Image (cartoon, rainbow, N blue to C red; front, top):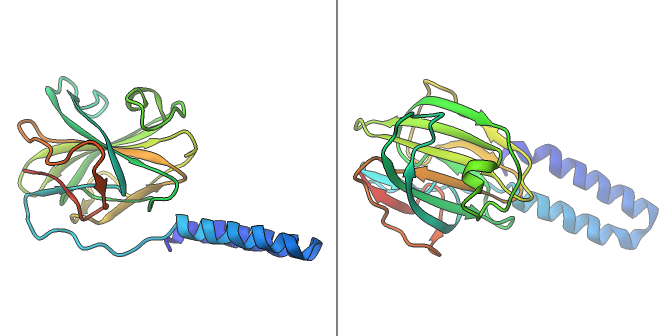
Length: 208
């Protein structure tokens, strides 16, 4: 379990104990709630591909959108259109986010916003989100964005500007359903399709 989930599991367990003390049959939904919260914050180990040119999915879930659009101006003004791969995470998916490539975070930017369904295209412009710009070990520049969804109300960023992270290393999480966008470098095309299932830190989405 990810350490960020410990207090939530503890709260759920205490609630289950209170319900059980009030009326024993209420212990059942309390225990199920605790188990559900524990499963939400599960954090399994992942094995990234050995290909140094691979770009992997930063999130578990399903590819919901493939579009060509500029990198957000808050990260890179006057960016040409590039491929954007959007991965939607349901409440049943692992919500720990992992680096899509090895490299250095050169800029981060938080934008408060609304909480539309994260599978919608407008979520990239309207929803609360945290933006990252990175430079890979090979000199490529790519961006990725954590986007809060209809239920998600908290984006957790564990990475900082200037930090160098490995491929598949944890950089944050989003609580309770959301989306991750990856903006590929110019000239790099996605190797996935809409509807494809992604495993964070393992499934390649492109090759540099």
